Image 1 (cartoon, rainbow, N blue to C red):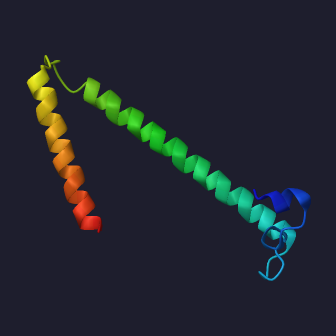
Image 2: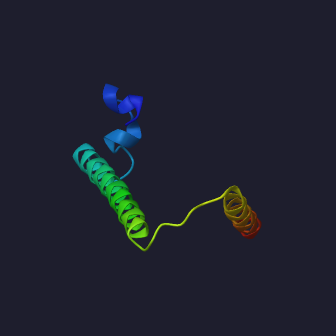
Amino acid sequence: MCEGARLQSCRRCLGIGTGFSPGRMFLATIMRKSVQRNQKLNSKEQLEQVLLNSLNSGDPIEINPAMVDEIRNRLRSRAALRKLLIQ
């Protein structure tokens, strides 16, 4: 929420010139924040599920420094490729 909304003087938050009444702007803000919270929660739950599935996917393996370096290099290569594709 912007500082103006707290002071009840922000044109955007009050809905002046937007075709929305102050009540509708407030409701729209509440709904948007609620959706964002739900999306964050769903993302966290999905991540937890993926991690749990990974832990339960098979017998554990021993990791050595060479394996860590290989994984790190693959991730760096993928990140560099994505960076090039985005530009």
